[in-house]
Image 1 (cartoon, one colour):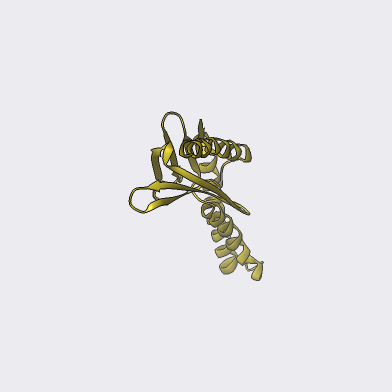
Image 2 (cartoon, rainbow, N blue to C red):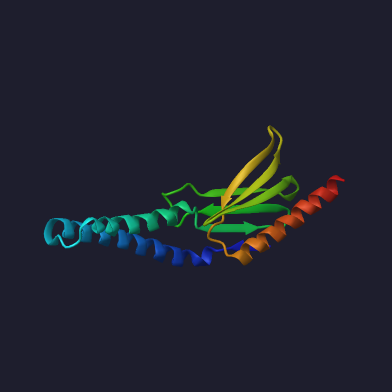
Length: 158
């Protein structure tokens, strides 16, 4: 099964650009109000705070692009940000038989996928992916696919 939200990259780019422009416009308006017009009182700080908060929320939710491929004998995970220099992109590929378990954590706006993979050196390794920008249906499809792999691995062990 293949799952990707790469086609939404242009939407995320537009949102990012809009939020940056909103923050810059808020700063310019704040400066103009503070030094020239003096019409707003302490409320003028909201011109900076609200757009910066929205921008920070957009980026703290995690990497926007998530790709998953379970075709063949390997599982392939890719997770990257739309702005390449902001975060290091993640790319992991490992055989299906190494998947031990997975967990999807959902905390308000932030969603994470934790994959536990068997490892020769340390017994198991935990991999973390940010899936906040996936839809509920995409997350359910991902869970279904990973459940199949985990179930097949348990049947092989028994």
